[in-house]
Image (cartoon, rainbow, N blue to C red; front, side, top):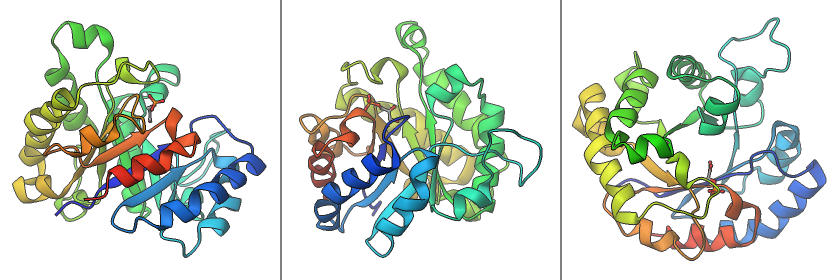
Length: 251
Ligand code: 13P
């Protein structure tokens, strides 16, 4: 009932030419898996060129961030309508943005509202740190992130949101969460909080992705579970391996 969703977060990697070559390599394989919703999220600088390359291919394009204001004196920032010129998706509140660029649940909430208003599909990232994980605070942290981040969102558009659970200790470390562990967070903590906000039917329709050291070797394990509806992939999305992850998500 929830269409599998796999997104590649390229982070701060690839010049325009390099991005274009990678898309050429990936495109036939991505198009061969129509059962999975696929999105590539390169740096802003590649969006214009990739939007032409991906037009009419069935492969989506996303930005990695946006500002919530429509325009103005915000040096270095990009507005929702500027993102929407090239993309249909946007990553919001990635843990690297929270850690290095002072993003908070409050700014995530502003960005989420602005993204939805611009007609973008937001991929909202949540997840606990190693310290919080070791202190047994995972449930508390993800609940707070969802409750604060998803404040005042209309039920009518809530099902468009995609959530990505990315435990910070699993990102880029090779220490992926177990499929049972991640699925339990999705099923027992995240989806019930979504249900408390939007009702259970909408909560059941929202895709919850897992992210953190997903590889071609471990992806299938996640997709077998009840509540992991796809993946947000970092390192492995920069390689042909990404295709194997997308194929593994086929229902
Ligand atoms: P890695 O797949 O490199 O661990 O990164 C995950 C991530 O942060 C995706 O947003």
